[in-house]
Image: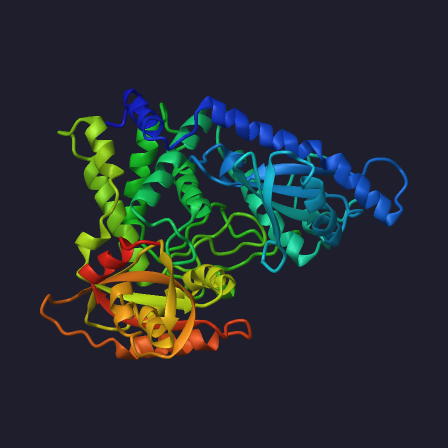
Length: 493
């Protein structure tokens, strides 16, 4: 694919024709959501002032979008990440106490949920059918202005650790914007949308499970851009082609740095990567650009890195094919992966519960544990390839007896399970199931695999994560052949 500006229209047209990016009306709808959220800020600050007997007019605070929406590089149906930055007159408890009630005044709002026990606590809501995540930062200032330079480390001084974590996304967003020349903003935004869509289609877009998320793909694209931003006649085509070539050839675990040295904070002390604990065993060390730095790819394992590198290689081959029409080239590049043609066997993690709340909890928790299972499997010399599937299959079934429930928890079909309930102990209920699949390929097609050791170790790990709320939760880890997995994937519920 020739890297000239004349080809850029093909990328943009693909995004539009395949509904990857929004229409102008949909973009306007998002702007309206931001306007509506801003419109209730005065109601919120008034409630805080009344509660705390503050006198003296408006309490300074403002909303600032960040993440993919803040950069303009989001794809259709993406959430809006937004942070409420406040003066020290507003406390975190005020945010969680009064802001949800304030949001209820909006006619188009629904599904307001407070998530307090997270590294970055948020209020989730849906405004006019658009999902919004609102985080909170309390500065140690009596005043705050929407034009403040978030990259100034002085704003981190003496703030609560949770506020510092909540500042990271907005600060990184400001850093990224500062690196991009005004004439290149459109090119960067469209390229980012292409990369995100490609990673989603090729199923390597999932940070907890061992791949990368949107912010990490953004940092890799930014690193590519920073190395070529002085290139004359930069284009979408050139930036994307360079992106795939760069990361195909990167000598991991060489770290990816977006700054000349690791930011040391207000004291400016020199920081060495080897002295930061989370990077000591990092397989894909990508360093976030703002103090305090963290790993943007903490869950990548040797096997998921191998999968991503293989996808970079494939992309380079597709884009280097000069004999194919550009439209066909992009169609091939963005072609969705077929797991069930690639692998004959799948390690399958079945989580079952009789409470929907437990089911939802383990939907969130399991992806964070899977990388440890991958590392256990990687110790087997007989495995050539290990590829976790990014999305689980979920289902729920009514059962009549304990025997039927146990059969469903082992991955049996509904028909098979019902055969076991004929003489079973009557105990009707509902079982909720989630299936996480990991495609595996042996070094030799005829090879017998004994993976009992990593399976036993992983089941022990799962049981060690059991809490007092998990009494109804059970796990079953087993190997299924392709046909069995396809039957589960395409079953009802």
